[in-house]
Image (cartoon, rainbow, N blue to C red; front, side):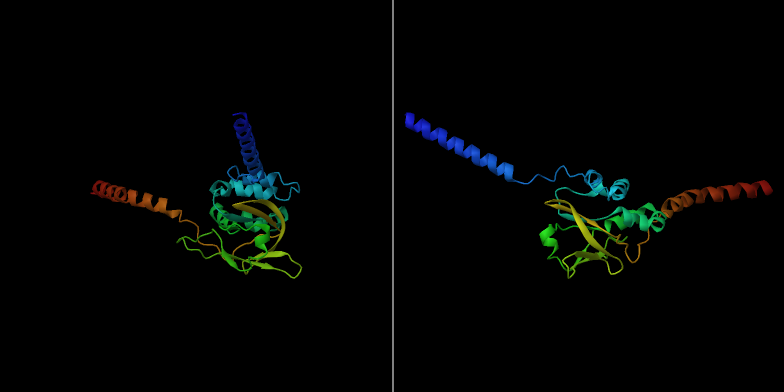
Length: 212
């Protein structure tokens, strides 16, 4: 009986050590992914503007931490270079431009070097079509280049890599060649005009009676 107890204790300790080692070796989950915090806490402080822009335009809240995604984050110099043109745009267009930096595929650093082709971004036009892509290429010196056939950026660092999310810093903004028309804000005024239409004729009728 004592031998059986000893065998049981040994097997139990072995199973516990295996389970603990497997749990410690597994990568941390992305369920607590916080885009704003990651960019703000980067030691280089080169992505503070991006942190603010991705947060103020609610890009961070749109990211599903359980879905594959790769984001190319422009550095501070990129935002400052395009500052006048960038801040002159409506909020909807800025939101669209930021989404032109996002691909709904997870590219680890090693896989990024092999992803030399065109990939659709999560940016959509007003009809919901995917018309905005990024081209990934590798230069002769091994640098990863990202372009949209209009602007080109180079990947300068890995900001975050934990499946299914990867963040890479880039040295340029990837403005699309053209921007889709923003949502038609005139819908509300058109509805108001329709509502006021009967009142106009009512007012016209009363004015006519008073003139008789």
